[in-house]
Image (cartoon, rainbow, N blue to C red):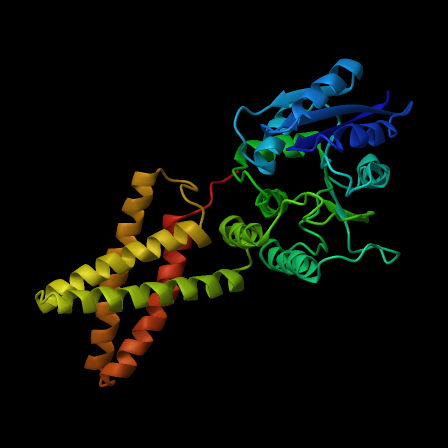
Length: 364
């Protein structure tokens, strides 16, 4: 029986290249490899959808779906993944930057039973290439390194379009995907690492186009990708990485505490009231930053229970801070040193209680 390769083609305003890329994909078909080409038109404003529908009428392997509202590449890929029926599912942009023939190489580790996911790397190939934007390449490589630090994968091109999955793997991951634009790349890479998939890399050909030629990714997408690396990857990162991130979250909360206290003093609130309000608001800042960056929101508990657990840690660590500081001072230690030691204990205690009690990962 031939294997079936499903290629999801997200399409937005690619009427000039869509037919050409479909023709090149069709060259992969053989007696041992059948194709399913899933074109997802993301509410194009040109004639891309009409071109896709014509291709669907002409070619049995082509299936076309359309978003009624433009949502982004990530959203188009989610739609395509859920409709895929092949043994393996890959991604093919509708432009001509990537060569579909490289999928024959990417398939090899999967067909041999050695891999669950294969990344096509633009940076493993040392031969001739078109030279374009230094900062675009630098951003890709920098984001890949940052992603590797969180996922503990040693890949060379996290931002690559060419990612090939066993269908069961990507359809297990797809319902969890949320990123609508290019944040899809670090998000799906994080879930691949979290699922402990066997990951391989293969060198691929790449002919980049300029922004004048229709390239859509920009610096804002780079910033979003960096956020996605932390937001989706921090909760599975090695402990030293989590501690570094929590240090900055704690520092931000401490600064917020000082600012809120200063505002209370400026408003001439009673001293105790200013301290209490500042402490509560700083705790809220800490919680929000933990959810946005470090830990996965509602990882095991509901929102209400998660907040209850957070309040338990909030009160517990407040009592502990008071007890350690006061206890050390009663033993004869100076106030400054007592508070410093209490702060270190509080930092470790807050991190451990948030990780183990407030935001524990759901058991699989």
